[in-house]
Each structure stands twice: as C-alpha cells, then as structure tokens.
Length: 112
Image 1 (cartoon, rainbow, N blue to C red):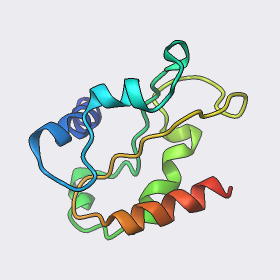
Image 2 (cartoon, helix red, strand yellow):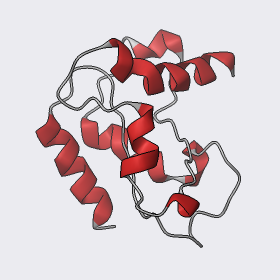
Image 3 (cartoon, rainbow, N blue to C red):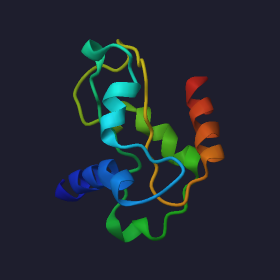
C-alpha cells in the first residue's frame, strides 16, 4: 500500500521535477480544469497496478494503460462513478509517451 501511495504522489509531483511537452503542475488542475470552484472534487486513480518485479517486463500501450483508469477497481475513493458526471479529466502519463498516443487513447475513452 505504501508503494502504491508513493507512486501516486510521485506522479503528481513529476511535472515539477522533469521537463516535458505535457507537463502541468497540480495548482493548474484546480484552477483550469473545472470553471466552477465549488464542483472541483479531485478523484485519484492509478492503473495498471503491477508488482515491482513485473514492472520492468511489462510492455503496455498507452491505450492499455489509459482504459483501466476509469474502472471502479482503479479508483481510490468509494463512490458510485456511474451516478455522476465528469466535468473535466486530467490523465498523467509517466515515461516516454507521445502526445498523439495520449490524444488517441482519450478519444477512445470519450466514445464509450
């Protein structure tokens, strides 16, 4: 559990530590994603959850990483996600990820 929480916090602070085309810091999430300050409820999700032994050997595409993020099993809150609506979403990918692949995976999620 500690490793999982450390990965989540490391992912949130990665834009502060590394340069990249898709970097955004956490302060921009609150102000720019949803225009109404009273409806900003940040929910965290982490996918795929893989053991540290398998992490070096897994070769997943951006679409295979993005799809499980919206499944209830990947969420870190206990709420019924089917009853509400997303006003905005931010997907943070770590590593060598092309913006084109992220946009294609996001478009696939939107059509579901």
